[in-house]
Image (cartoon, rainbow over all chains, first blue to last red; front, side):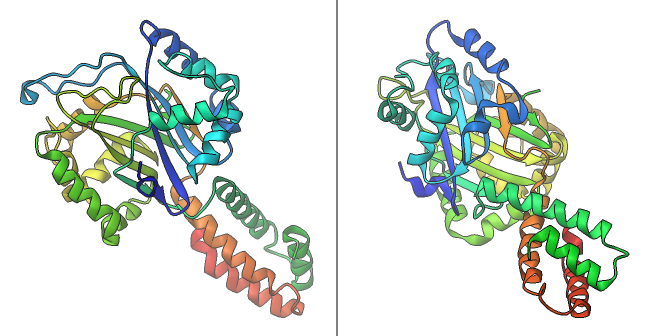
Length: 183
Length: 182
């Protein structure tokens, strides 16, 4: 695995394709559908995650006669992708500890998954089912997820301040600025 | 729909690659990694947070990987806005690059006209079963703007010790500087 290909600035891409065990696809799909959405998602507990998803790939798609030979996967795959603050090794540990039981409830439907109790085995499983990116693009690859959230909050604060300080005299403006922005 | 989280939308597309395609893709992606200009167009499509392409030569499993008749191209993207607009913009702004990339996949109708292209993407798209964004309310533009605002604010903090009139002038200059980012 050439990790530099999964990197753009400090941002990293993780792509994991794990084989789904026989007759487990619907149970897996059900479990994923019952995960809390939004910021209550278990992925919110995985520090350093910007965007991530699980996708059940039942089989590959056939393009019709132009393709000549159709393909079929022996087993469906669970795709997990994450766009996160690198490097990979500490992130895999974040993934294990941050997801907790959810990791087992999800990847437990996949063949060969060793469980999340053993950190080394968990990381080894993710790495051995990882696919290398050919090209990874990050619009703000220099910023960690926390930095992004912080600067968004600052921007909101500046907007609010600009609105409420419009009529202030210079001395009052300066005092309120110091109070708001801690200068 | 799990492909949407706040203002963010997920796209996951997997397509079979034609014979000879891997070599072309190797060159195209090499250019993408090494020639700065290639990715600048993606930055101009200012609504993409993160995107990746990966060539799947074999699908990982416990027996050393499952090799199908064809390798597969995975495309994963996180963007803000509507699916339709995203595909429209992609097919117009980076048409040449799209052709270079998906031209190696079976069934690709070309980026224009856009309707057959949309049908192609829909046909090959997998809907996410669970999708997460750490900042679902933010667009890419807002994030890039926020970084500039933060930088300018840091400078303004340095002026907080000036006398009140000079501070007001510095504050006015700050607002002028960041007005496009607020």
